Amino acid sequence: MTLEQDKDTQIDVYINGNDFNQANFEQTNTLQSQANTAYKTPIVKTNTDNKEEAKRQLTNLLLGTEAEISEIAKGAIIQSPPLISRADTGIIGRNTINIIQGAYGSHKSRLAELLASLMLTSNKADDPQFLNFKRTMLERFCVCYIDTERNLTEELPIAVQGIKLKAGYQLEDKPSDFRFTSIKPVERGRRFDAIEAFVGHVRNNTPLHLFCLIDVVTDAIGDFNDPKESMKLFDFLGNLCDKHNATFLLVIHQNPGTEKARGHAGTEAANKASTALQIGYEKDASGNDTELIRLRYLKLRRGKRPEPLYLQFCQQSNGLVLADASTIATHVNSRKHKADSEDIADRLISLLSEGPLPKNEVWTILEAEFKAKNSTIRERLKGIMADSPDMYDEEGRAVKLADYTEGRNQFFKLVPME
Image (cartoon, helix red, strand yellow):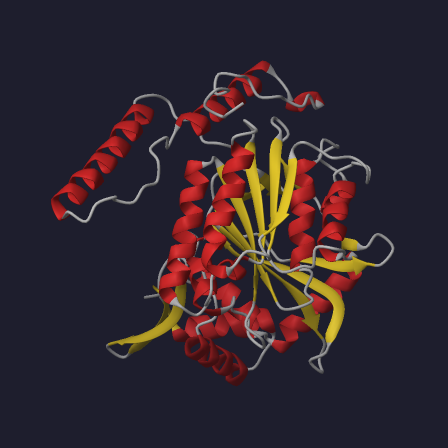
C-alpha cells in the first residue's frame, strides 16, 4: 500500500487520558492530511540539453509548486505541534532537519538512539529513561535508522537492540514501524541514491510520518570540506523531508579540539538545521573530562533556547540519566567563576537580542554575573570576536559578536554571519 493509496485513511491514535479528545483527534488527522497531500510535485532535473526546453520544464515545475501552495493557502492552516518537546518547549518540529554534534566518545549516537526510541515507543510519555523529553502522543511514527560506519556483525545490531528495548519491545520482536539499514557497503558516489531508495521504499510501505536518523551524516559524501558537496547534501535531505513526509535527525562529529561541527558540512548543517544540539563531557579546572555531560541547545528555531541539560552515563542501565541537582549546582558555579567563553557567548545572545549596547554596560553586567575581573571579561570578549564560535540569535540565524564606534561611544552588537 502506497501513501497515495492510503491518504484518506485515518492515522492510529494513542489514547492517553486527558491527552485525547475529539478535537485533538480531528486536528491530528488534518495535520496528517496536509502533510500527505502537500509537495506532491516531484523533485526533478531537466532531461534535455536544449536551453529553451529546460527553461520550459523548470517554469512548469515552479508554476506547479505555486499552484499547490496556493491551494493550501486558501484555507486555515493548522501549525503542527512539535514532534519532540521538553518542559513545554518544542525541540524538534515536523519536516525539519536537526543535528546532534559532539566529539568522539561524547554519547551523541546514544542520545540520537534514545530519541529514536522515544519516537517508536507506545509507553507513557513521562518515562524517566527519556530524560523528560516527550513526543506528541496523538499519532504513531515510523523510525527509519540509517547507519554509515558501524560494523554489521556486532556494533549495529547492538544499537538496534538498544533502540528496541528502550522503546518497550523484546529482543525477538520485529516492529513494523522500525526500519534500519547501513550504507557502509555502498560506494560514496552512490550513497545519495542508496538513502533515497531506502527512504522511498519505507515510505511506500507506511502512511506514518517518517523519523529518519542518519549516523554519521558526513559519511554520505566524499569530502566534508567541499562546499559544493556539503550544499548538495543538505539540499538533498531538505527535499527528502518534503518529498517523503519525513523529519531528519543527523549525527555529526566535531572537529578535534574545537566546538564546531566537522568541516564545511558542519557549517552547512548548522545553517540548515532547525535545531542543533551539542553534547560533550564537561572539563574540570585541570582540563580533564569529568563525569558530567552537558547537552546544549546551540540553535532552536521554535522558540527561546532552554538552559543546558546536564547528564551522566549510567553503567547499570547502559544509558544516559539526568545528573543530580547538587552536582550540577557545584559545576555551574565553577563555570561562572571561570567566566567560560561558551557561557559568556550564550549570555551575549540574550543580552544583545534587542540591539547594540555600550561596551561599559556589557562589561559591567558580565563582571557582576560571572564574578570576574574587568580584564578577564575583556579577554573573553576579544577571544569570542576572534574565534566566532557558533552563535544563533532568537530567530535561529547565525551571528557573531562585533564592536563599533559612534562618536566617542563604543558599542557591542551581534551581526549576521556572511
